[in-house]
Length: 398
Image 1 (cartoon, rainbow, N blue to C red):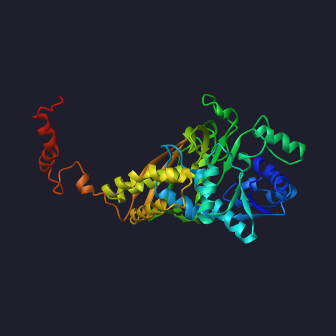
Image 2 (cartoon, one colour):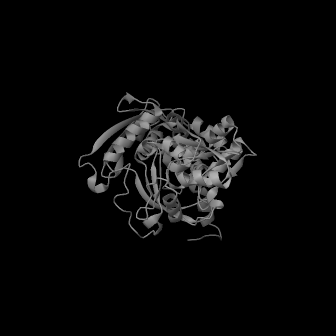
Image 3 (cartoon, rainbow, N blue to C red):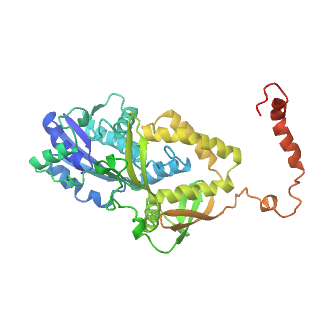
C-alpha cells in the first residue's frame, strides 16, 4: 500500500508518518505545500524521510496561492462571521488539490491528513479530495488512532525519537501561510485568558509597534492588487510587502471565538497584516467605482461566499457561480487607495480612479446646477406613500 501524507513537519504529521507506516504496513510519501510558512519549512524534507517517509515533495505554491485563491477571495471581501479573513480556510483547497495530483503521479492507494476529528480542516481536505477523485481512500488518523490529545503525541514522539518543537508549556496549534498565522489550543482554550505576548509572529505587539504612522498606496486593476507605492509586484511578493508593512504597525491581529462547521465554538488568535490592509483598501476603492445596487447585491453574497470557503466548498459549483458574478462586479474596480497605518489601525485616507462614479459637482454642499434639491420632495413623498396609507388605516401603529 502506498499513502501520500499531507506533511507539515509539525507535531501531528511528524507522528503520522511513523504511525501510518506501521498501522497500514504502507510506503509513505510526504507532500508539503509551501504556501508561505517561511522558516517553518527548514529541513522539512529531511525530517519526513528521517521519520519514515520514502520521499517528500516540497513544492512552492506561493504564487498560485496568492493569484488563484487569496486574490479572488479578496475580490469578494469575504469575512467569516464578520471577523475572520479566512487565512487557513483558503489554503486548504490548494493543498488538497495538489495532494490528489501527487497521489495520481505516485499511483498511491490513499491520501492521509493530520486534521483532527473536531476541526474544519478534515472537511476542507476531504471535500476537495472527493471533488477530484470521488473514490479516493482517505486516512484520517485522528479519527481512528489511540491518542487522545496533543500531549499523547508529544509522548509518542519522545519515545520514538521524533524531533518536534511542541512542548507541554507551549502546546499551541499554529498554521502559517502568506495570508495569516493562527494560534489555537493551550491557554487559548479558555476564552477569558489573555493571549500570551510571545504569541506574535506576523505582527508586532502594540507595545512594540512603530511610533510614527506610515502611508502606503495600493493600486488595483479590476479588483486585483498589482502595486504598492507605485512599484509592481508578483502576487506572492505583493502579499509579502504588505505583510512587512502591516507587521511594523501591529495591523491585523484579532482574538475571536468562531463557530466551526462541525458545530462547536473555537477560540483562535489570528494575525493577518497584509490581508487586513487589502480588505480595507479594496472596500475603499469599490466605494467610488461600484454602482450602488451592484455593490449591495455583491455584499449580500459575502456571508454565503465566506461560509463556502470556511466550510470547504471551494470546488463546489455554487462557489464558482458566485465567483463569476463577483469577477463581473470588479470590471471597473481599478485605481489607487492611500492608507495610513498606526498602532494596530489601518485608516483609509484617499481613493482615486479614472472610473470613479463620485461626482463632486453633484455631491457638493455648495450651490450648483447639477442637482435640484426641490426634486427630493416628490422622491420622499412617493417613498412615504405606503407609510401614509398605513397611518390612515386601522392598522396604524403610532
